[in-house]
Image (cartoon, rainbow, N blue to C red):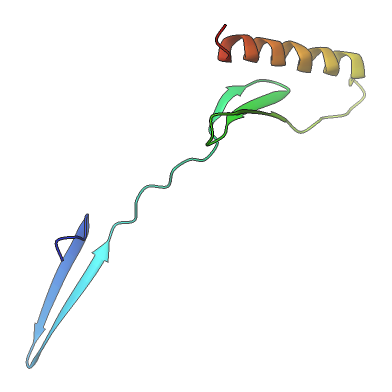
Length: 88
């Protein structure tokens, strides 16, 4: 029983039986691919192998939407993020 970590051990005695209950505490979940950049148009996550992965956020198209402004915003955020994340 010494190999069980973070366990709660409860023993219940009731003649003629003895019951032992073991409750283990599950390990905290490891967050996969954490966001390391969160902009208006994109997020960048780091994969388990150390690689950077850009992701587009949901595109909101309404009467004020402009393809040129969207493309320029994505390009600016990508350049800003990469300048900060990649060592020169």
